[in-house]
Structures are given as structure tokens and as C-alpha cells.
Length: 471
Image 1 (tube, rainbow, N blue to C red):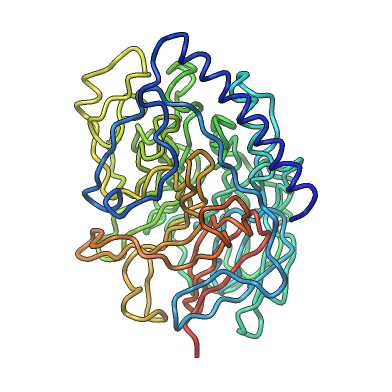
Image 2 (image 1 turned 120 degrees about the vertical axis):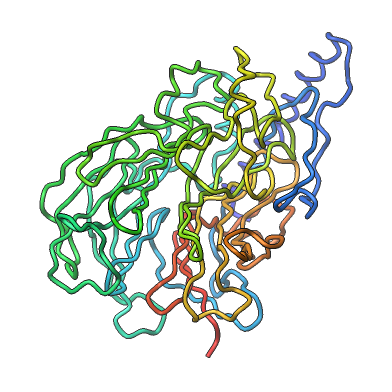
């Protein structure tokens, strides 16, 4: 353990002890010690899947901070995949790689960006932010660039890298569309074809002219859509996803608060999946009440859009579930008034029973505080049948739960267009001791590469991993 990690750990213990004394004094004053926090416990399968067990919120929830201590990957150590799979370091030495995108021809783009330090919203948030130092999410500066990686000899390791686009503002989602109708661009588009490259900064969507096969964009871009910047607890990420026919772009925007505590006027255009035309026109809310949507993907059997979503904090270790769900035009998932359908969050005022009645129940629980970010449906035949047709989902991992959860990539099987079983661990080992604070890395973006292998961006580990069947 490094001296810096040891100092952080001792400081956190001291601050937690002080907070506990203050909270006990408050509880003694109001005369109740009942149901404070239930204490750390393992996530159980009963809380996962299409029909999860839902716990009641803590009666007197106390904010918890069990943030990871990121120490990096020891030499020769990699994440662990199921038997029959090999894990290789596709690219290392990156600067907080968050999101991945595959270009026609197989080149891989990596958005390198990080949470930027900012003034805290309150004394409580100041303490919580301080306790989370060293979790791998916040850095003194964000690289604000997109790097291109190329595996020229097909050995599963990138042997060329270069700056594709720079001087961005916390870039995340990326997409490629034709420069003019028809807008769809297939994986076999010819080099030299003129297209449009889109990137979602935290404060807007930009469009750049690009020729397929080039390794760098130098032409100036144009902002086609303004977005509300930043947000509560790192909700700065803005994902992009193009419809199959290229006719529209979907844009994710997380909430500006945990549960509407800054007023609902501050949430205009947030906690939603937006829809916008390729030229920037026709922008509208496509689906709403979705606290912090990130990964998007099309289920291959039906072509339906799905998303993974981070739900609210400070209701207890097991409330409320983060989830995987369909996203359709007009869908409303309840935030901030309710969660998991009609479960009312009493902290939100004014109450809106009419909107709670409208709220949809998500399709699939991934467990509270797992922080699902990446989503990639398994297509093709490179993987064995047990890993075809379902969804690979990265779980960035908890920071506010008694026992840590997440810190892995799971596979959710699908049948007939819907999830058909419990999530299965696929890539683990990001925490050497699942119950401890020491952390090697944290998975974020996931995509399939040209050969069918799974690429996983590890922001805390500054690495992109590749998982593929042996042989």
C-alpha cells in the first residue's frame, strides 16, 4: 500500500468517526435510534433481474462513503474472464479512457475525459467529495481528447495510436453518419468516403467533417445542439447513439441533482434521452424521468433501443435499483417523484401523484449503486453460444454502499428480445478483495471490435482491455 493511499484511508476513518458522533448526537436529540442504516451487506440475486425484491428505504438514511482506493494494476495482472477466454491489454498508458467507438475498417476511438474538480454544492457534498478522493473518477485536469487506436497486425494489441480530435470539453459519446442523406454508414464503408463525425461534449453536440480512414480530424466543427453542462455527482457524461437508418441521433443527459433538490426548473432538458436530427434540427425529449442514462444499444432481434441507468442515492444500501430498460418514444420512468415504477420518493416536493401513476417499471434490475455505464449487445459468432444475443454491461462500482458492489462487466442473456435470466459475471478482478477498498481499475465503455472481441475501457486503470475466446 502506497503512503498516499494509507494517508487517504486513515483520514477517511477519522472523518467518518467524527460524522458518526455528530449523527448519533442528532439522533439522541430527536429520540430515535431505529433503522439508521442497515449496515453493509452483499448484493443478492433476489434483488437482480426482471422481478427483483425491492427493499424499503432506510427510515433515517445517512449518507455513506465507501469510495475505492485506486492503486492501479500491478505488473502482469489483468482482469479475470471465464474459462476459455483470454484477456489482453489492448492499449495502456491512456489518460482516463471513458468511452469507445469503432470506426469502419476497425479503428477504435477512445474518449479520454474526467470529472473536473468544482466547488461543492453544500457542506455535506463538500465532505462527501473529499471522502471520495482517490476513487479514480476526479482528476485535476481532463485530457479532453479522442485518441485513435489501430491494431495493424490483428494480434489483439493496438500498435498505432494518435490524437484523433482534441481541445474538447469532457467528450464522451461518439457517432458517425453520412454527410448527406441517406445518413447511415455501414461497417464496410470505403476509405475516403465523406461522412460526419459527432461527439457529445458535456455542454453540447458537435459535428465535424471526416473522411473514412483518416487518423485525425483537423477541420473545424460546428456545435449543432446545446446541452446543460455538468451535474450532480459526475452526471457530466453525454452519450450519443445513431438510429440504425441514420435518420436521428439519441443523446443522454443525466440529472442536475440527486432527487430534484435544486428545484425542477434546474432539470429542464435533463434526466432524459433526447432526439435530434443529423443537422441539429428537431431536438426534443424522446424519453424522460430517467435519472442518469449512459450506455445505449439496439437489441439485435427486435431493433429496440435499450439503456442502462444510474438511479438515486441516500435511500439505503439496496434502494433504489440501477437498471437496464427499453427506451421508447414518450416513455417516462418516474424520476424524481418515484423509482421502480410507483415507489414514491417522499423527499421530492411538490408531490405529483399524476406523474407517479404514469411511471413505467424498468425492465431489469442491476442492483442498487452498481453504477452501470457501458452497454454492448453481443452480435456475430465470435463468442460461444452462451454469450450471443445478450448484453454486456460494465458496472463502474459503488461509492456509497456499506459493502462494495459492481466493479465488473456482467452478461445479461436475452431471448425473444427480452432479458431471460440473472446477470452473469464476465470480467472481474478490478477489486482484488471484493469487500475491500483497494481497487485496480473501474470498467466504463464496452464495444465489440472488428474481430468480435470485447473491448473494455478502464478509466481508473488508464487501460483498454480486450477479451476474446482462446485459440
